[in-house]
Length: 604
Ligand code: ATP
Image 1 (tube, rainbow, N blue to C red):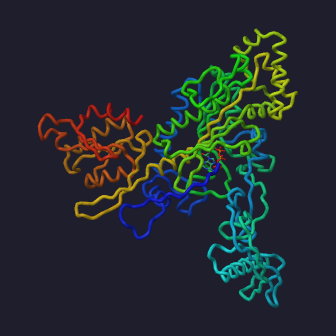
Image 2 (cartoon, rainbow, N blue to C red; image 1 turned 45 degrees about the vertical axis):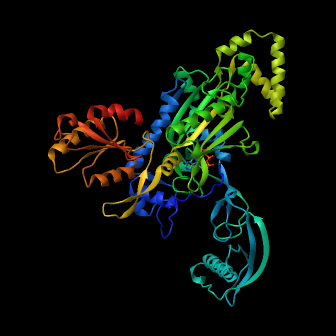
Image 3 (cartoon, rainbow, N blue to C red; image 1 turned 135 degrees about the horizontal axis):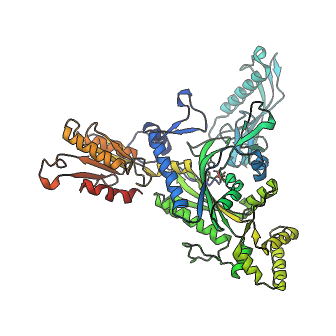
């Protein structure tokens, strides 16, 4: 869900001739330090695809691990899945992706560039319509070029642009032998004024076509014949595999509703306009949880009521009488706490609660958690209450029952009189009717429910790993001004990653590389620490330079082995090192043996 936001630029503490936009600095730092490279860089790159270099790969792995730990390991009610990227095409038919996973696109009639219909901002100004172009003795055009004059653009420039487009287009249409339209072309010109129009391309000003759907799934063909019948899709989301494997997971694990299935993996979307570095890519990774809960009707039968949300509701511990609303809010709170735990606090996040008209037809609610990126406040994660839509669709399309049996529900129903059951039935039909669901559907649902069966509903927190990596990189990026020994000022980059996600946790340095005792001791410290933490050994250059290199990599701690460590200045300092903290430059003397105990709690 896109929400407009202002561009954030870095204001350097010293005067700069020209301010470089923050995003440009981040992209260039990512390449320089090996966080992110353009895919196939030596061939000029490929739009919408990115590779993670040595530091980026570690960062991404750490993010993946924090998600897996928070969502799975630290909970008893979520299990994991690792499904294939290509699935039976029927999965995508059932999920609705084949028919409806598309963006409404409009095409510029002048440049043929496509743009998402919802990305066209309203524009006002003078529109020039050029038609009936004639090129004396050669050609008379039968199409029009419609251009919106750009802000501050001279009329002659609009005419020139129109002429150039016309010539280009005609030459392309006529083929090589007639490709001879030149500047002699004459255009008939009309003008009119438009206000707040969304019919013109934001870059060229060219008139846009009407919006048409463009399916975002990437196709491939299985087998040697490669006909349309062999079409398969690279998954556009990881979630569907969870629904398709729901029954297998239930049958093979000791899970019981409410419970979740989580998965991290690649997803592919043929985005029409990949943009903002890795933010909108064509290949990306998702971290998705499907958390299955009983329908509210089951909760009501078991507990006699469904707990209602209020401002002071305690969302920290799930309660048996929660319905979808509280579960949904619980997951928003959980995910917010997760982000705070890796350094993305409330000050850099925003929330967009989708309005009823923005929701998918089956969804009860959806909240987008947004991050304040340098290019605007944009979606990091969507948390949707999707009802029983997904499992019901797969049940219908596969013909396999995806209901669960709930003992507690069965026991609660056993206590009801026939009259109470009839009242319940009537009440549900009434409520469903208000939600545009048929009485027949409600009756079938009640019949199964009163036997203890239901299709679970689902809350889906769905996050993008690459967007998260970009958010933590943007969040960590800081520049500090330093004055060197000769009085020269320079601006250094410090990546203030939360220690939990920093690619390297500790840099280990001998003070001097030409002192074998220091090097041997430093290597020994490095060998011990690297078994428990991601470490980097560096003996090149001055200590200041080595600190600066680690600051740029985002390493939170550096350990220096000096003459005190090897006991040259007395036995009391033997086997102690300097521990330097990245964010405040603080240095302290600590025993080598204390390092793991000091560092591990901060990085885990
Ligand atoms: P958007 O509105 O930005 O296109 P979406 O609402 O289509 O995103 P979902 O289908 O809900 O996104 O996917 C869940 C998450 O996957 C998103 O919140 C985002 O973090 C990530 N994601 C989706 N599309 C892309 C993409 N093209 N590149 C990188 N990450 C993506």
